[in-house]
Image 1: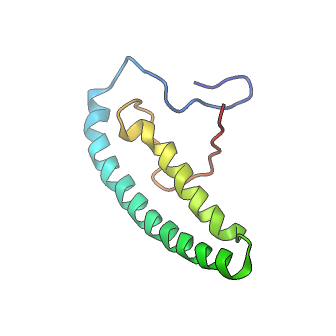
Image 2: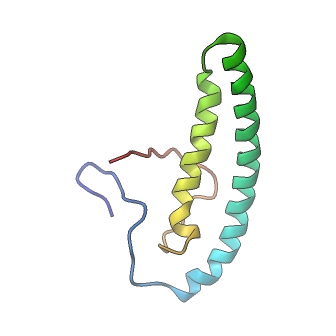
Length: 102
């Protein structure tokens, strides 16, 4: 569901559901899980490096923060699909999304 500013609410109840999409979802879960696992390991390594960067230099590295942020945004972006809230398939590989607090 999009509003006039072009933003889309990710977690919206959808009554209609496709049985075919439910079968496809299993394969999609596996692919998304692999991407999340690899991306999560990379993000975790970046967080450890970031910790030492802050400890030694007293500041954060933007590139390292962007990787952790990208992982979290991807995770939130695919949650609606993986938790069977929508039939709209997300991209398997991360795409730029922005998450806002209301």
